[in-house]
Image 1 (tube, rainbow, N blue to C red):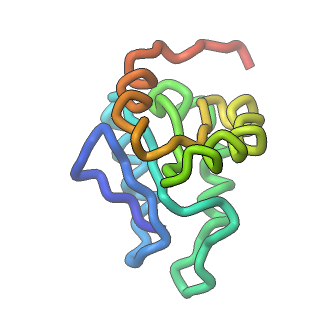
Image 2: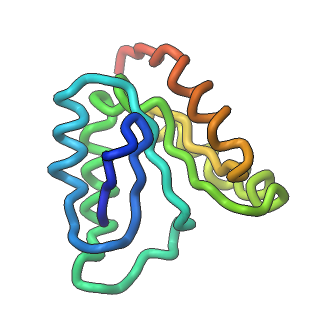
Length: 128
């Protein structure tokens, strides 16, 4: 998995090589500024190539939930079909509670407004 950080605070995730997600996420958390994770790849559409480290990524997200909650404003899957975005939200929204930050599917026409809205929210502090 590859993270592209040049459009910070928009952090794009893809299944492209080279795999750099762990170093990039650690650097983002150390930076301490809010960001939004974005992808156009639907969950379960991961490649089977040598850089497919989806399991390690998933485990890292779980292990760093508390740190992510403070910096990750949201994780958005961007699709080009509004009906698909609406339909898929029923499946991904429950991940929000598990991960500690909002997870949503958004139509590409709403991406700018959604990113802005999530970046303006204050992270919820929980005693866990």
